[in-house]
Image 1 (cartoon, one colour):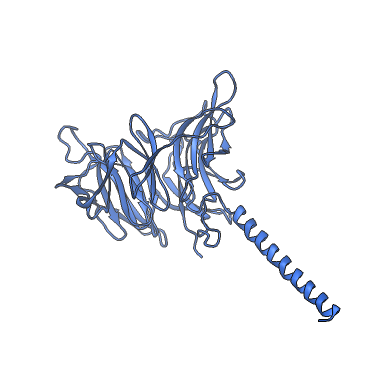
Image 2 (image 1 turned 45 degrees about the vertical axis):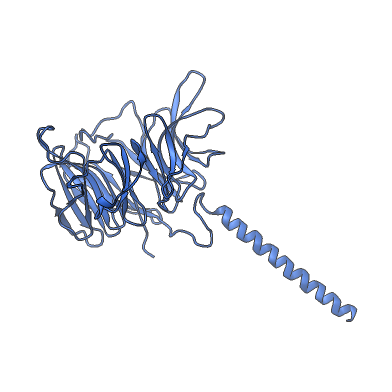
Length: 379
């Protein structure tokens, strides 16, 4: 081989090696730039940029309440549904499920997200609804019938509906309505986790509650991972992270922030986990004052996403299913807040939802209202 030929071969080899290094660096960059807990960068979750919030009317002004749709890409908002005295709502894949009415006489309405057609869902009796939540096309809630507590047919009974149904079904176990102390959907498969009156944690499909799998005695369900494999549960002694396929339980608690041990509040997994997003009470100074904050916690190096100012209060939050954004409910002036008087689900008239980027902690949007429900964007 001539010197010229060997030289060309050497340059070709170096070029191929350089391109390989660049490709590896680029791949690593993409992985590092993906949201925490987002899983394999080669199979990213579909982007979520749209959702809904509930904006109640100021009682001093009057008027109907409204479920407002929002789009983070365009900044546009619009009224998806309005009615008097909306208590809460949930979003399924194709509809909104809206609870409205007075405390002892709630109604449930489904609203087609495409054309706005509304249909009332029949309940088994007059009564109240709480713990409303949806998964796919299924929605469930707890129902308590009106009247004397000693004579009620339903007390915290689990009911559910599927898309297209015009009547809620009562979940019965051993021939009686399933009274749930707490419950949650298991994402992806349409199953439920629920705690019965004997503090037994059960996993079951709502159409087959008698085939439930027992997962031990617990008092509350704090969070379930997006893959349905892990839950954070608690009793009066401990809060633990519970692996649902084998029952393995490990202690759970917030990681110290800047050396201080915070008081933990509401928590959700960031997508499949183990990272989680949690509301914490963090110390402000040596006087003992604390402020509310939302933190991304990987168990080692927690990162504060949002911290309330001296005047603000944080009510709740909701993480987008793709792990990219966080909807935080903020009361801008706690001292001057006015209640909307929706007993027992009252909220501040001034409450707003701030959308926070989980990647960098920046506020990217703000809307009046609360109770954010994220929905997959078309396309």
